[in-house]
Length: 114
Image 1 (cartoon, rainbow, N blue to C red):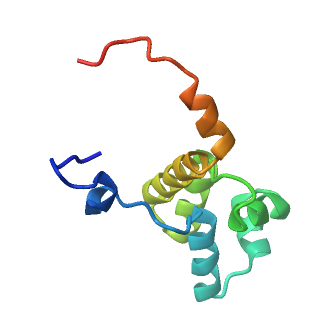
Image 2 (cartoon, helix red, strand yellow):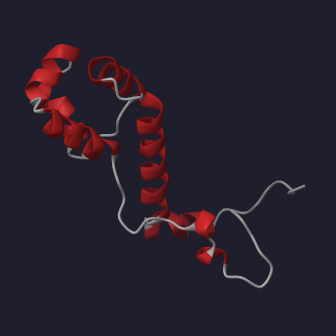
């Protein structure tokens, strides 16, 4: 996190968080629609169950590294940005989970920061 003396850290561009979370499945789904490729066809081509792919595309299941690489091979979409998007989605989801945040508050720091 960037800190500038006298400024609210949340208002610094590098610290802004999106209001709406974007799951990588949404990006892949949009790409399939643009290219006119059905979910079933992609699932068949990459050798995964159609329902598993559908759950990823509808943000009900995280995009795994293996699935990202299969999609990269089939569609030419670079796996790394999709996996980065998944990591950001995971982090922001947890940061917005109030019960988990309460749990975090209860954990003492056990190591000094240097």
